[in-house]
Image (cartoon, rainbow, N blue to C red; front, top):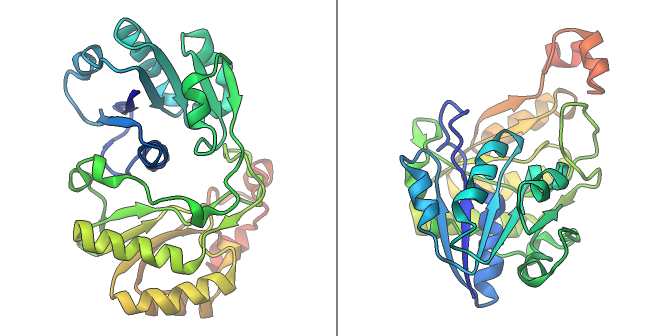
Length: 289
C-alpha cells in the first residue's frame, strides 16, 4: 500500500516554516516501521501546492491540520478524490470537530493520538475512530524528520537555527483557550529525550532546541535530572513555563544547563480575565516571574 502524508499550507501564519509538523511525522514513523511505502508532502510555504496535490496518486492520503486549516483541508478533498482511494484526517481539528471533516468528504477521521490506530484507519469503513493514548512514550520512534527539509524551517535561538521536540503529552490544567484533550500528563524518560537530542545533533548538525511541551517545569524532579544530563551536550534551548511553576533556584539550574530563553504563559494582566480563562494563576505570579 502506498501512502501520502500531507502537511497543508499555513498562509495565515507570519511564517509557516517555523515549527515542524511533528504530529504527522510521528505517524510517518509508525507507518514506515510497519513496512508501508510512504511519501511526505510538506506544503508549508510552497507555491502552486494545488498542482502538487492533484498529482498525488497513492492508495491513501493522510492529512493533518488545525482548525485554521479547515478551508485547505476542504480544498485537498476536492483536489485529490480522483487520484486516491481513501482520505484520512488526523491532528488537532480532527480531534476537536471530526464530523466537520466527515461532512466535507474525508473517509475516516482519527480522534486523539493516532499512533496506535493509524494502521486500522487505513482499512476501516468507520467514519470516525478514536485512538488509544500511547502510555509509554519511550516506545515511540522519533519523528521522521528525515522526510522533510529540516533546514528550511527557521526558528532562531541564541543566534542559530533550532528544531523543536516534545517530551510530554497532556496537561493537568484546564485553561479555557486550550484544545488539550488530556488532563493526564505523560513524561518520556530523560534518557529517551537526551537520545533524541543526540540523534538530531549527529544527523542534522543542529544544536539549538525548542522544547514544545505545554509546561516544561511541571515536574521539578524530572527537570533536575534533565538539566544534569543535557548540560553535558553543550547546547542551547528554550521552553514554555507557567508563572506559578518556576522559582529562582529552578531557573538558575536551567540557565546553567543551557536554557537561553523561556516563554511564560502570562495571558493577561487582568485578574478578571485570568479567572475567566480558568488559568488558575494570579497577576502577582506573573509579575514575580
